[in-house]
Every structure is written in C-alpha cells, then in structure tokens.
Length: 543
Image 1 (tube, rainbow, N blue to C red):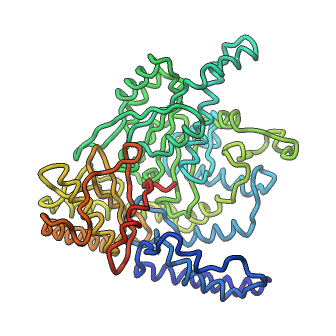
Image 2 (image 1 turned 30 degrees about the vertical axis):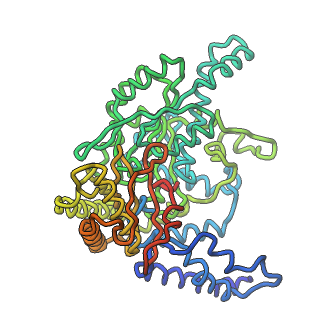
Image 3 (image 1 turned 45 degrees about the vertical axis):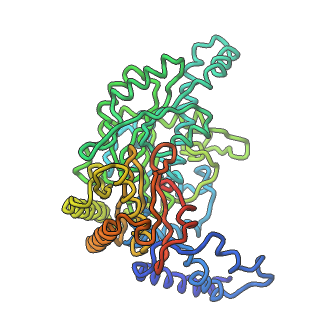
C-alpha cells in the first residue's frame, strides 16, 4: 500500500468508523455468535498475493462485527464503561504512525516528556496530593500502564523489594543480608478486603507472596468498606503468626458495589506499621475526583505510596490508559531498573531524563500520552467534568426509579458513582436470589440492553452502570421499563418450572468468594443457547 492508496483507504476507514458510531445504538449490544464462529469464515492461511483494501474492509462488517460486543453503545450497562472518543482515536492513529518502543528518553524525547506533563495535568485535575507530582521534592510522579491490574502488579514488586531491603539492612555482611531475605521472603503477605478486585490476588500469585482478604460487611444503607479497626485486627493477627504484612490495596470504587474504603481511619494504623505500602485502586471511580464535590477524598493519599486510575474507563480515553502515581519513584527504580550496555546513553547516565522502562514490567511502551493530550485539549476541563456529572446524574435518576418500585425491587447498597445495585424483592433471600437471577437472564436474553450480575454476602444482585459518551437519561428510562416488564413477567410465571424460557435457577456461584459476574450472551431474536450463557464468566473490570 503506497501513500495514495493509504490516503484513499484511510478516508474509507474513517467513514466506516463514523458510520459505526452513528448507528451503534441500533445494533444488538452483545454478539450472538457461537465459540469458534470465525475460523470457518476465514481461509486456512494468508493470501499468496496482495488483496485490495476494499476486500479487506468489507470483511470488517461481514466477519468481524458479528463477533463484537458494542461497549460504546448506550445500551451497554454492564461491568464498568470503557470509554472511547474521537480525539482518543486520533491519538491512537498518531501513536501508530510514529511507532517507537520508547523504553528510554532517547527513543523519542517527546513521548517521555509529554507523558510526564499530561500526567501532572491529570494529577492536579484529580486533586492528588503534591507528593504525586513529578516536580515534588520527594521524587514522585506518574506513569501510564496498560491496566490497573498491571499497575498493582508493578507496585507489588516495588513494595516487596522495599520491605525485604529494610529487613536486610541489619545484616553485617552481604551474605547475612541475603540470608535474612531468603528466610523472610516466604513470610510476606499482602492484604485487601474481600471486595477488592481480584487483580491484587493475581499480582500476589505473580510476585510469589501470600495474600489475606479482610471480610467487610455492608447493607442497603452502608456500603462494603474497609476500615482502620478491621485493618488493625488483621495486621495483628498476621504478625502474631510470624508473617510480614507488607502491602495493602485500598479501593475507591470497588468492583461489585463501588464502595470507597475509609481512608481516614486507615491512616492512624499506618503509624504502627510504617513499612506497609498502601496502594489506592481507583480504576473506575477515580475519574469522579475531577468534580469539586469529590475533591476532598484524596487528602489522606499523602500517607499512601501509590494511586492508580483508568482514564480508559470513564474519562473518554481509549483503552489502554491506566495512570499510576507513586510517591517515590526510587522504589520502582530500585526494584525494576536494569541497564545493559545497549541501553546506556549520556542523558540517562547523567540523570537528566526519565526512562519509563524502569517504572513498569515490560521494556517497550507505546506513545499513549498523545491520546490523553488530545482528549484533554478537545474536551477541556469543563467537558470532562460535564461528562462525569451527567453520568452521575443519570445514575441517580435510575436509582430513584428503582426506589419508586419498592413493591418489586430492593436497593442492595447505596447507589454511588452512577452505579445501582438492586435485587428483586422477596420474603426470603433464597427466593430473591432465584427471582433476581431469572430477571437478569431474561433481560439479557431479550437483547435490547446488556447488564451484569454480582454476588455480595450471598445476595444475588443486578448491577446497572452507564457512563458511556452516548448514555442518555431516556436510554436508562427504557432500561428501567425493561426491568419492570421482565420482573412482572417472572413474578406472574411463579410456580412454573420455567420463567420466560429461562430454566429455574437455584444456587449462586462465587468466584474467589466475591464479585461473580456472569455474561449472559444475547440473541436479539431468541433466548440464548444454554451453553453460551454458561461459557462466559469474567470479572466486572476487564483490566
């Protein structure tokens, strides 16, 4: 493909992308294909000779789109949003154009320097404490990671190495220090609540450390939050057993219910455990910090070591764009910095520049700062705040509609950050779980909207969250009408073996004891095949 052919192809591709977004609401939200659908549609190998772009492009509609779940559809009310925007798409286009590995400053100085600048912009928008800025005296700063899961794994490595180095400092020789490390490495344990996203547990598996989940409780009037007293009790219990608590994940917006842990009550506990690395997982709800009414939340973060939020969830920036901040970059560098001869250069050697390869697990990295820059400039602070505020306002409306039908619905936890978690009302919990699951499956089988479910303290519940750029109040109103209709159908059919073609569902499964989120595949014209419904299980966050 030469430059003129690329020009023509790019025009048609952009037109197709625009048409896709303009018509996305009319598409069935979730793909109804069966596993393995694509292989029979494609040849056994690549073509021997070049194919014209028109033939390649036509396969997008005929072969790829049937297997796409439309996350940008306003009828996508599942998991958490994964925002995309035209400025973000343009940022990806330029990033692909420049294509450089960017493992050090010299690879492309603009890639490194723009990342530092826009992440400082974002830190100020979120009202993060000064210690997380690149200009802070303590040596803080931000770095773009692929996902919040990647970010937590990165800081787990840094926290592990920091803790072991501190233990080994009493050694009188290199050999003695190494022996101390070897004797204590297997005793390290990371903590989190039983509502924390599973990425921390996965990070523990990767880094070879133990993990401990602290059980938290909640209700319709109080969300499931981790508090200082609960943390202290767990720390004391683990210490008595001879273990070394070295890491804690606290959450701003938990996966199942968007709970915010009690940061203020956790801070005093740290006075007695100064070597405990505290990481704030704000993957989804962190975006809300750009609104004035939430800017008091980050104040305690100055006592914590790291913070991460995903611009690619709620802040109009295409995946992948997870923004990790640390209070001291030194701990990342100590744990992750390796400089073979082929990476050496005078700028890095003299300490004049930032080499982001030392702030992450991979070596190479994409020029992701471009899309943040494009999005911030295209929407401005007012546009970004307006998007978040509208999402919250629409979510509040949906919660009020649910409360208005207290005869058939119950709110499970207080609605927050555009998320409503609710169940079908019944005299017994077992009955409510069965009815709620039946409604959930009936709604997804109908195919007009797409939702996810969860399990909290044995309560099977439905989660509804908007947050997409195309989400409007009338869309959520229509979704509520669907819930009412399906619920009334299920209740009317009570006493039969099946509800709206959905087999009577007893029992609720759990994944790791929490956050079991099931994807009911959707067929726009008929109920799903049972195999598809059972095949798809994933965590709500998806990264």
